[in-house]
Length: 414
Ligand code: SF4
Image (cartoon, rainbow, N blue to C red; front, top):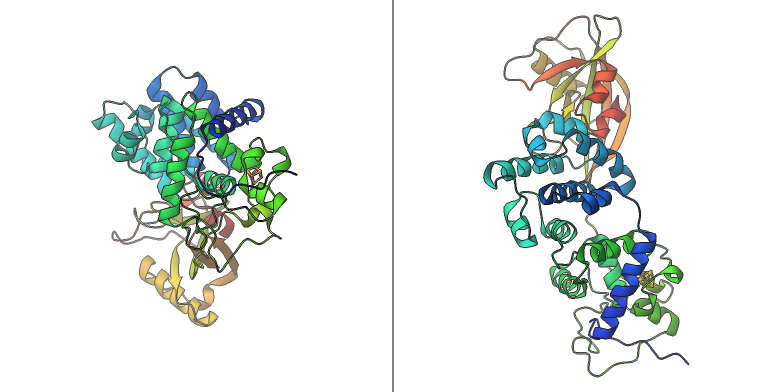
């Protein structure tokens, strides 16, 4: 009969660690996806360009799927192949290229950091995770580790959502994986596990495993290159683990990494018992009235008025149709009135509420906001002269609108 699975959450056997590294890297060499930033990281001889290429990819990949990022990444690297080129770009250009990728502050901070590298660091990307995190705005612990290991071969681990899932399953970590104490242990584990001779490949392999095999809902355990090291799979196959006396942190009741006693192992979930997270906060509901002001342009086609958002906060510096946040419980008639008042104050000319045509509602989910845009349209005969205190504004054709730095939500509104 097969041996019962060991308990404990460490990788304490050096021979097992060696085997795990070997199996994972061999699988990565065979199965890794062909991605443009990987090709650049492997072939670019200039160290600063290599660091930059990985840095851009890592920032774009935060919160965004690989398939979406590829096209943006290629366009970005074509337009700004070096840090120096990016440092000379305007925020408007950055926002235009970033439009549709979401989490717009990422692009803004990437450009600020590029300017800092050029003006304060002699154009050289810091070479270690510690220096990257300390010196570059927008570069946190994960991104710093990824750049340092992939571009510069520093033997430092990384912990992102994929790594959390894989490590929690490999070692049956069932405590809240978003808690700082568990995250610290996962970082210790990632730093101990990383392959010393191929740290960048090892980190990418661990993330790739989480993205393609050890996926959240239905992991492909049968195809997994590290299945023989996986305690969650062992537990699924053999049932309750036998206690091992020399495991220091996995006691009977108060292990900080085991599932809480109130939510024990659920055999119907199998390996997806891990990881566990505290319940997410519900996104805040918001309603915003937005008005598409339309006129006939000089070439006969319609033109739309867009205004620029403030340079800080949500969707900073992006362009949108004139918009106004609404109280939650307003009646439709009242919403129309407050929007008309807002437009009137802004344009300095009378706007009748009944002239606003209700078009429909557009729902867009930001990370923490469930936003409903209540969309109106208003045809105009002539131009609109805004007061000097108003935000910058311009008339655009539909084609110009689509090429502008506008959010996905505004494209849906149009
Ligand atoms: Fe994930 Fe299954 Fe592999 Fe374990 S065996 S690491 S659960 S895919």
